[in-house]
Image (spheres, helix red, strand yellow):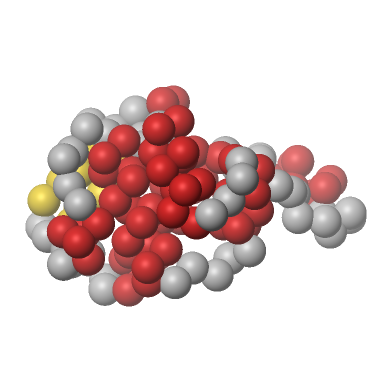
Length: 124
């Protein structure tokens, strides 16, 4: 069972239940894969709201490996998610929110006046 307080999410891939988490090691892996210098640059990349299929493979793969599964990105490329492409995006979005956090509605409403996106997905 996934523990949201630890940044874990549950997801179904190929009809099987998995736990995913972006540990510090998984985030370092993603920094290297995307050529980002630090976690802030990585978070800014994700907050842009545009993800390629290759991005989804890398993020889901890193999340699976962070949770302890020995799985390659090549294996992740062949996995199926409920809902197809939107299912993959949902997994990635939930994983990024669990990792980088999300503000409450009240915080979002007061920050909306500034209209400047924050450095982490789901924040203002």
